Image 1 (tube, one colour):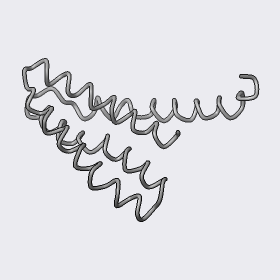
Image 2: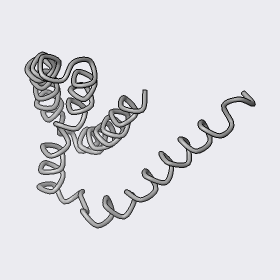
Image 3: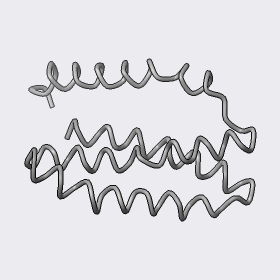
Image 4: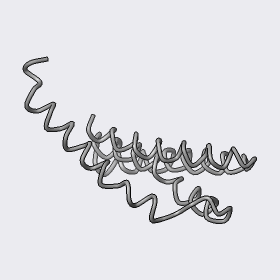
Length: 112
């Protein structure tokens, strides 16, 4: 489950970027994103499963959620709605949340 939680980060970032571009009536990027995600899962999942087993397949799903982010960011940069500093500034909070959740689950799971 912890591996799949990384895909939630990629999907959240991707959805926010897609909605920003949709607000500017730039909806053709959605097709590019879906194509990249589909190809990454269609090609990467069997290869990773063959070499690394089930854990590799899980990482293939996670990789599929992050593969479209560079394409979106290039499109957002082209339309002047992307700031690299503002994006990187929030990264520590993701790590803090992950490790805080792991700490809570490992220490207080017997109470629940």
